[in-house]
Amino acid sequence: MTDTRIRVAALTPQMDLGPREARHLHVLRLKVGDSLRVFDGGGGEAEAEIAELDAGHAVLTLGEAVRSAAETPFPLTLAVALLKGDKLSDVVRAATELGVAQVQLLVTARADAREIGVQKLMRLQRVAEEASKQSRRAVTPAVLAPVRLTDFRWEGQLFVAQPGSAGRMMTLLDWSAPVAVLTGPEGGLTDEEATALIGRGAHAVTLGPRILRAETAPVALLGAIAAAGGGEA
Image (cartoon, rainbow, N blue to C red; front, side):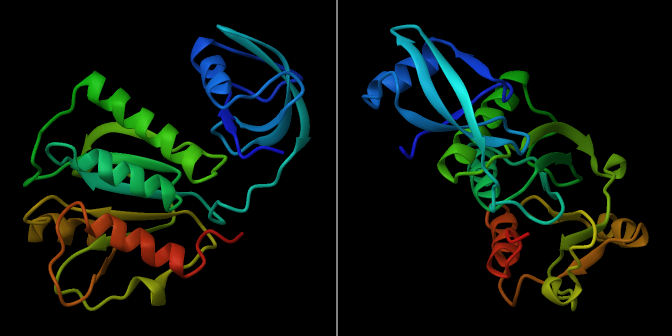
């Protein structure tokens, strides 16, 4: 059994791969008859065998299903304000490794940007795909186009990182329903934004005595969930 994992469109008895994935198999020196794992990005994962392989094409045959232990009991969402430069890529990569089911980009009052281009959104989705492979997840998080903070909706609990708050996420966290965490831009959410979210049922929580950078805060929140066993069903 190899450590190779391949993303496929769907887990079907026979799966056709295109030139990109076929080249990847060649680079790994795999051949017809070798085994690997396939996942569909939606939680399905299984063993597979290479049935055909040439320079630009490969065919896999489906084997036994594999139960993934890398997911949270209910979906975990990261809602994060738009950040400039490559910061969003770093956040999406780390968030994927730490178990989120989706990343919702937000436009907030102090956000570094007001919109994001289609190409950059596609790049962020590719970052999530690569990170899901690396971290051996069966789920590839969706990176969702930005919405205004006032339009953001969530299920279950929402935890908002807000300096000076008394709440501690790990004493409030309840995995009987989906969970979302929300972090702001450099400079944080405005008092009005935080108050509005709390009025809608969100919990304001502390990240400790230090002020974290906008790209560090989401990783800190998600890391706390992962360390507490959030990836154990």
